[in-house]
Image 1 (cartoon, one colour):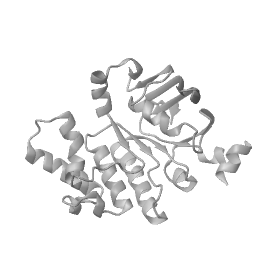
Image 2 (cartoon, helix red, strand yellow):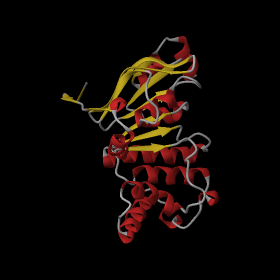
Image 3 (cartoon, helix red, strand yellow):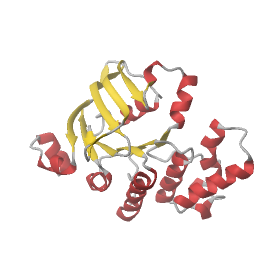
Length: 249
């Protein structure tokens, strides 16, 4: 694929991937490429396979068939130990934030750094955490517990935790679900800011069309484990596919 006459670099390649859970086919022969510096939005109803695809890319589960390459490595062939450096290049923002209630905001953000570098100097760690929280405008909440935060604040902390290891790719699972429109717009602005300022590649799973159009360079629509659309927002709006029209409207 080319952009402005120059070839784009694939950072994720999903090749003929199927995933079954028991007798259920969750993903069915799915192929998809993701390019450096883009925000790819994955749309689809419940049960379409969107979140399963994110977990496969993270290496949390393995495909039944096919292969997934992340930053040039076939992760379907890697052991848990071999997956660690790949996962360091990936940030994940869970739907509910998945913050640890027993830890402070600063401790939550520091957690992935300690996982990969347990011997890091405490002063250096505190400075990295402070800078990361400042980037998402949450530096004044370092000693606060997640239970004291609003939904939007929790999402900002979750994003801070995802970017603190300086990943090349961030995966977002429904990042604005449950947020009011103003707060959702701030989260969308932050996703765009990370792309523009840090050239971070993002895959965003959502079912909210307004948010999808606000952040997407490219959109994919999934249905029953298959990809039924791939293209830009204007192409999606012009699609005559009845499922897509129903979803958009």
